[in-house]
Length: 322
Image (cartoon, rainbow, N blue to C red):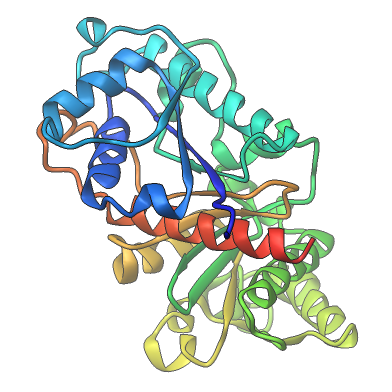
């Protein structure tokens, strides 16, 4: 009998749509409990309230892992609060540590609000950086994926002004290798990768900035020398059109909005965020806390469903290959 992977959901910010999309997802199919052992990390009263509000007649099969004690009576949907930020953070930390110790096989994170976590007095730039810190690794990258569209990011949650300084030769090459590893893990033996330029028109031979000439092009040459199947740097404004992007198995983006804007236009309702390079498996929704619709009962769980599917797939694959 095949052993099911153990999948941990983190509830996200209680004032957002995280608890709602988790209970909606688990209520949407009776087969989820057959595909995986399900755990939800967070505040029991918040999850119980979410089930009562959004799917009262469903029988949900999961084990609650209490990481906080916030009550539903304390909750104001759509409101930024330090307490909600802290509760979301505690759930992520507990799940990541359990994944590291082998108690669970993968974690699927619901959205947190960065401002809320910082309001709680905890410096926080995002799930990606936090989980990498918990895993004690500097070798990591963010990847967005939907079907055959995969985009990895050289830099993540930083100011645009910092991008040229942080897009170093080593970081570009290392992120490309992480992307190549991720694509190979999906069964593509020789992934073909595209590299986006930093500047408009790939710098126009240095007329619009020297970063692509001095850093990106040498990094691409290094990748080619080591046997990687890679092209670029491409002007970012044409890289994501269908006829270009479909030629590649993965795209390397230099900064957050360069890749996130086209990705969300193409796959907002089914996109998945993954953290590459970690010793654990972590996937996430590709959207935020949606404070504007929180508590209204209209949140879409498609992205969470895809994140769960991919987490299960990777957990099973890792188990079979170890």
